Image 1: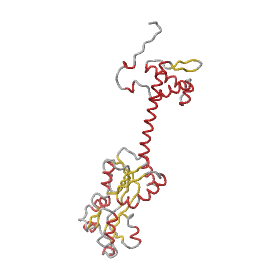
Image 2: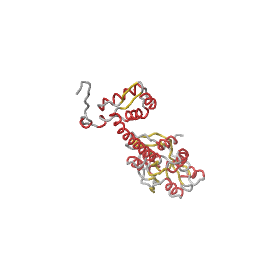
Image 3: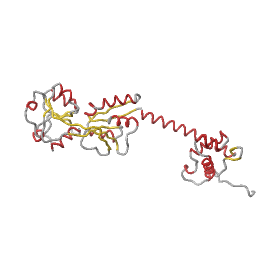
Image 4: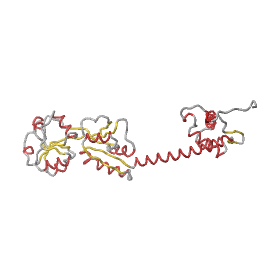
Length: 312
């Protein structure tokens, strides 16, 4: 063997370990393909938006990594060596496979961004979400939205199990495992049918009287029930327990008894005198309405857009 000959370690005999350390990165392979196509390292660098010194450095680094010379440089341009031509053929397959990978990943993103699963507690689902979803449809007409309505505990379960992308709750506290932001404020009011004795009384109902009176209530786990229970320090056994705001309202309108509902839910009934607001002393029934999502996973795509609309 002459003194100017160089021995190179065959690929198959190189040390083991992660293949990522033995195969040039995608950017280097794209550069090699550009050199082969354009016949100039400078032209390849310009096409890829890098400087010529950076391109030269990348080629040298690739040659050291592989242990073979890839490019012959001369005043007339850059020419692939025989080894460089062979490596270029392999590189082309890798780049084409990477392009297919990228196209597949984009398809997954498009599929994810074409749907939105929302879980919301009943008051928000019935009285606020319809307007927000109409506005979202104007922005994202191709997004398919599914709505899961339930109490605040059910909303948390949907989010934590991955069945929903964004949730809305009305309770006092943010359920464990969720991050949140306040999107609105709400107030609970005591209502009764016009014929009910509370609708005709001249003095306000005291907190103690309210706590000791059987009321038409939402089920345990609802945000309305949580706020009322915390404000009064306990509740009497419900007169009727129902699973939706609409059902509670209908029972109160029928004269079955007094109920506690969001003021968002009873605007029409109060204006038409189908229900009467009953003043209450010594108790504050305000609450925050919150958007929630799994801790550490800030909403993206259509969920992010819907969240922004709730603050508009």
